[in-house]
Image (cartoon, rainbow, N blue to C red):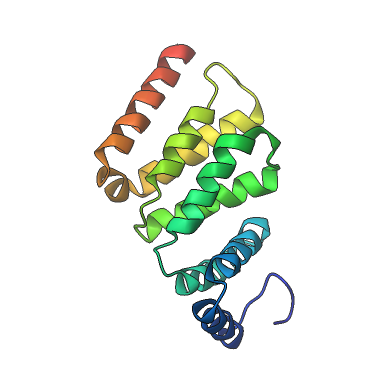
Length: 159
């Protein structure tokens, strides 16, 4: 590897082989951390593919860890990590992975009537993900209803 943000095929294969031999969860969390802190969008898909190949459970372990972090520590998470979570959620939706619970938790973090840049970024980012991956969202009717009613409430608060 040339630097921490780049990954080549040999490195990916080595990581995946090691992940399937032992300490699967720890390696998976480590790859996810690299992905979340990686601000270069060009290399993010390579790290996501590495994460997918190392996963044995369709990233369910990662989804559970992110859910726990968002529920208990959302206000303490840095902007870089929040953006990384949104980027990861977008990649998970693109891959049709069951990560609807993360959307539900992030919807609860939206503050109605708040016009701060962080809140507006969260509202717009989630809406972009939901529009871009509509078919994925429609697979989970409960999540679709949550998104629909949350954005209706935001419109009602705004006008």
